[in-house]
Image (cartoon, rainbow, N blue to C red; front, side, top):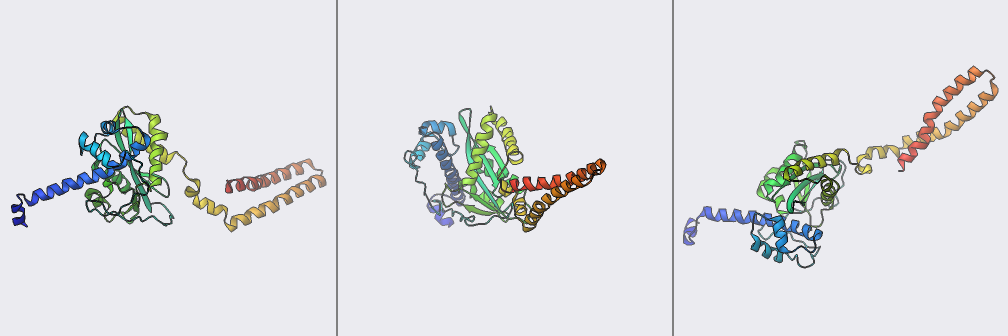
Length: 322
């Protein structure tokens, strides 16, 4: 091989450096096209030059960006069933592992996505990793570039700290370049099972949390600079995880099972039967005894017993079927 390198006027080190450079370029392009499509959806009339001025990608200048913009088909309607199994650089995409997967608890499936946030006429990037069962955000980051070291790696590090060493959940993403680069895969090795969408449009849960944090929190917080954005993102995630109500059926699955348990239904039936009997007995004693003191004491006793039963009788069915 060394003789071959000499014949073509290069060295082994140069070949590897060029290959690594092209691989990094391909990874960032793969994520860049996803961001460009998000921008196109939000700004249908935004041209290539204006889009470049807002993104200012590190991997290419204005002319190369405009050419990439045209090659990506952004002037045309994007076909939503766009599919491929292998990137042009030879990077194999991971299979979709969450199809027909039945969730039974937390830390089984994590979903992740990268989105943009417009700040003072320029774009910053937000990365989220969310637990699909609890809908809680396990990892997040804000960055000024699309480099893996600034986006997915900080968010992944935060999420991994919350996992036990014995837990190996699925990490599902849209297949952007930051999810299959060498540095990212080193972190997921033996800790997570990588999964990717068959189409870049099939990551609805992660995309939904993107919109929630941006539109329900950050837009209203209105950060003035990047440092404020990072602080307000931390606050938004904290508010989302701790204060915002999530899906009641998932969060309180055990409560729902109890409400429809046979023992609970038997208890409820008993209360419905016994309560009228206590009411009739109370009326009979009131008519039979003339001693006001006895009537007062027994009425107080009946009231104390009957009150919680009536509460069970009327309140609990309302909760159970809400």
